[in-house]
Amino acid sequence: MAYLLYAEDDFDDQQDFKDMLRNIDPNIRVVLVHTGQAMLQYLDTLGPHEEWPFMLVMDMNMPVWDGIRTLQTLKQAPRYAGLPVIFYSTSSQAGDAALAIDNGAAAFVRKPTRQDQMQGVARQWAEYCRLFLKGKSPIS
Image 1 (cartoon, rainbow, N blue to C red):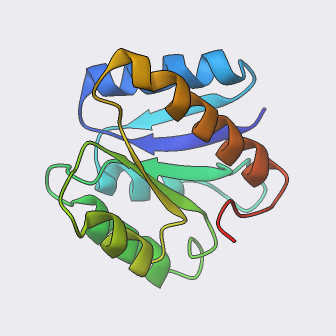
Image 2 (cartoon, helix red, strand yellow):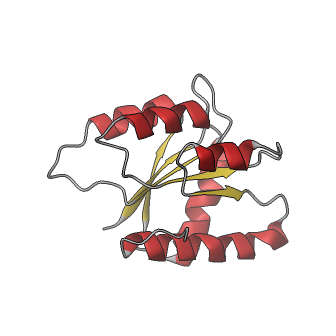
Image 3 (cartoon, rainbow, N blue to C red):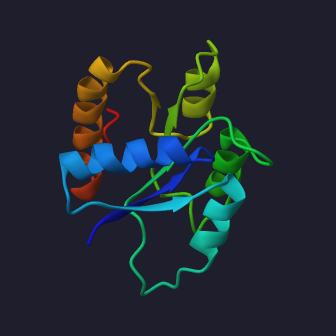
């Protein structure tokens, strides 16, 4: 079963994300970790014959290591460099999205602040999942 790995330190945001993806496709499993370091530790446990996540998702603002530091570490390690990373963050800092893309993220998605915005974000995630599962990048 396809799965993605999601690093998010806020429990409510984790649950909202899982619920959103469950509504998109109940076959997509979400493995949750609470920090960027925990994401790397999880990936370190995977052997070459184990199922790897098809996508990494992370928040920009996490304790200890923020998303950019985690992304830079991932992209410097040949074992992880090819894993697509998407940021999913409430950050409204003008340069955060550009910084993420410049450091190798496939995309930067802003978390909706209103419930009525969730449908558009859910459609965006559905497209990302569909493309990554087909081995394509959503960024042309």
